[in-house]
Image: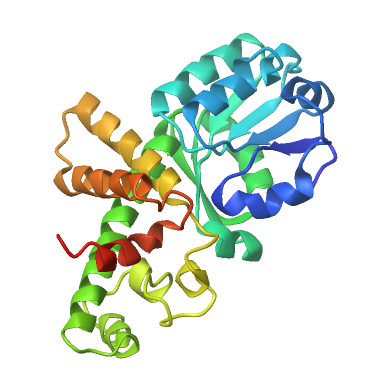
Length: 276
């Protein structure tokens, strides 16, 4: 990767890469912008992203004209659009490119990036993101990458809850969890949550459920992303009945001590909540 590339921040899968590309301790985003003309940011929330770009020591304080700024945070599409306007005023290019795939895909270089921005700049972004992902997809104008990611994560949350419920029900009906997972994964109920990221401890190796739900994609981040989906649904007057319910479930999990666990810990949450 070029010496002029820097990666700021980390969340989910890109945490693996940030350890290799992180700027020196004590440096500010502005200092990085002064030395690099291609910067990738990935931060947990919209507020963090705004601070990284527009804050007192943000990227826009010293960004060079012609720089390519790629934000792989999962944030409000409206914030991405506003950041793009500010970046454009400085003579630079901004693209939103949220990421999916998790730590496993990051390690193998098989992440998926959903990119929004000026189409003429996509090839340059694709060249950089291709070092970390096998799927770099152009979605349209700035903000459409965020839109795709929000839809994906809403579906992911719903399918994870559904998988956890089905597995819990089957276990209580006397089925062996590995056998049940095998049946689901050769039947019409198969999904990523069942065949790649099963939430039941002992069913799969190398996933958070096999490690007391440590690592992976945090429940707090899932609740945040579902909040973004809820806000987008409200602004577009789109019904998301299951998405709204998933949001409430993950918010409840955060309030009950699951905030730092992987989002697949919804299985453990359901097992412990007998009152449901």
